[in-house]
Amino acid sequence: MALSGSNAEIDPGGSSIGTAAINRAAEALRDGKLVVFPTETVYGLGADALNPDAIARVFAAKGRPADNPLIVHLSSVAEVPAVAIEPPDLALWLLERFAPGPFTVVLPRGPAVPPAVSAGLPTVAVRIPSHPVARALLAAATVPIAAPSANRSGRPSPTDVQSVRRELGDAVSYYLDGGPCAIGVESTVVRLDEGRCRVEVLREGATTREMIESAVTELATGSKWQVSGPGFTSAIGVAASPGVRHAHYAPTATVVPFETDADPPSFGGNAPRPGEDDEPSPGPFALVHLSAFGEPWRGNPPAYHRRFTDVEEYARELYRAFRQADDAGCRIIYTELPQDTGLGRALRDRIVRASRR
Ligand code: TXA
Ligand code: MG
Image (cartoon, rainbow, N blue to C red):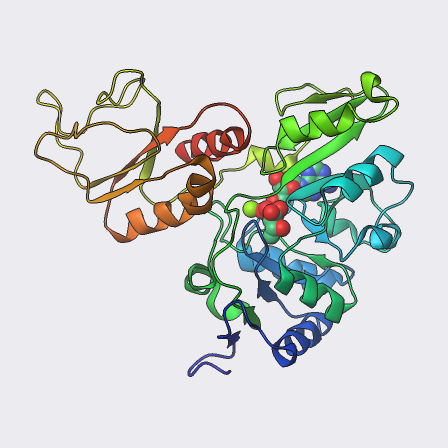
């Protein structure tokens, strides 16, 4: 359906996108155009990964620094040789294990992939998404799809198509609406340091460190391999995950993280208590949290308030909450840091990064 006053097209089908829409989007991709599509994690801004002009359009549309590489999306493990050379056996095994799903592995880049995709690095990040619309698009496109999260650089990733359209508008030729994303935070990114038998988690995500650890211990050689978090200092290059240098995930309001306090209703830690007698009013503020506490705002309630029932819902809704708090005019978003385990690790990472800019 063509939008009036716009040259972008959007399929309004929600989760029931038809073959015709998928085929048109695939055709746009093969023509070097940009297509927004849903994945199980966040929406992606897709381009033909083998077309340097299309890749340049992705960086321009996002305002993305040229030194931050893109993830290449594939239909199946069988397509890895089209984009990577000599992938380590463990990398393929991990892909077989965790893909399709929120799992990305960094491999040696093959000659068909333009250097710009990887910001000039000799590697390429590969992911096989599980969302049915992403899979249908990959199948119809018959080319690998480079796709960063479909936000302007530095902003929270979009978890619904409306958020993307507000930010990217006509820079995109075709929008596929797959409804809200099920996971809500970006995929786990890992690379392998074979010399030191390390699986390095470069970015935490819904394929948790615990899941990777337990998978690795199943290997015959499992005892040799260890899994390290993003803090691990690798011997194989300084710019482990180039993207982590840049500002990320930030709404317009200031994100103020706070630790779960054993003694509710304190906001605890470093966060000032909104509305406290001896502090100036922070203006309209938002409160986003998981644990139960009373009403510590003393007559100055949050303009936007979300409490989530579990860490999965928190992940699914975090970026939406950030955008909605902005829309509600909030200046500060008090954001609870969940426990530092499982999916909570990914959330902590995104919240802390969103607070630094
Ligand atoms: O869930 C996701 O991964 C989403 C959906 C759309 O698939 N994509 C996504 O892409 O989050 P992006 O571009 O927003 O984040 C890609 C991350 C960045 O942190 C980047 O630095 C890292 O992956 N990355 C990409 N290629 C890399 C490489 N060759 N070596 C190391 N890190 C790489
Ligand atoms: Mg991103």
